[in-house]
Image (cartoon, rainbow, N blue to C red; front, top):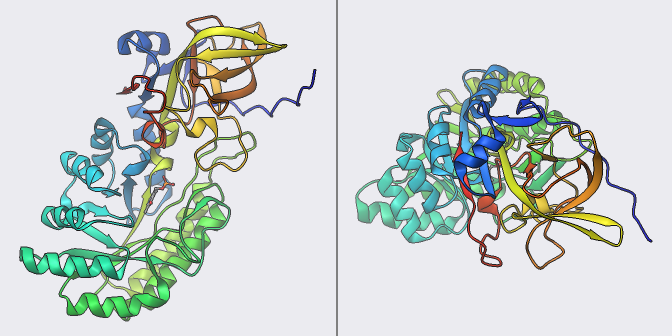
Length: 413
Ligand SMILES: *Cc1c(COP(=O)(O)O)cnc(C)c1O
């Protein structure tokens, strides 16, 4: 029989305590939580971990830096309401997200809307709501000028800049080179003149270079370059810069060998950037926006073992959840090489007898693989398979209609 060597194992996940071999979420044993939810699969997000993560970021970064939550990482309304009380602003990427952000009680002044292809109807809703629009093109600026005139209120705008550099070593690059995001830095001066003539309420700049970086030095370098670029562009601005949003890109460890991001150098870097900003752009606030880093590690995806299946010497645990509900864990959300997310048996963490198994979902495609040949305690039907690091880009980043299974429940515990 041909057998590939098994993939490397993860370092243990420690954010959820284990009592008598069972994971605890918000102080509740997983088995009891599953009974409370009433069905698997489900996503569970732990409030105390959200609180702790925000507190950790606040402690590591200078107090003057505003912390925004980028909602697309996890737009569950209850979670957004919880985050709204912890952070200084919400960043939305669609009119649908804007509605949840407004419902959360966050002040419209502190909500911003970024993303390419905003349509006139989305822009009109945002102008009416009084939120800040991160303008991604001259086309958007013109639509906003028309809308502002028609509605008798000046749209609040920041220019999203496509910088002439990128976030090195990041999982996803969203700035530098030709991009659909933002306005190329070299075209910004001309756009700023148009924004001034159109009477739009200019408030600042937005830069977002990339996502999922575990390298503090790379993040510091991108932040420094972002601030320098914004200072250069500010000389063409029709009004003083009030807000300078330099993005985020903070990553979390998913795969074997990943080490957690070290926030200390980022805090030190931001400290010196604050003085730079205070000197060059007096009155401007510095903001960062984080999605994944704030919520990713606080979430679990939980499914049940339906069947143990042995095929030509390889054991498959067939579970009731899969790639339709957690695309990222199956390796199909932006990964170049498939690697296992951290997966455990949540009700039987340290079973004595161990075995190697692949965890697969109920879809008729070999892509529906949640874990490829990992070592687990010997599993029984009904055991709860848990995927860690599932609080960001989980359910809403998945093709949940694929194969017409019912949607999973999400709970905030
Ligand atoms: C996706 C996105 C974010 C969030 O990125 P994370 O990697 O989840 O922190 C922030 N800002 C913008 C503009 C985005 O598009």
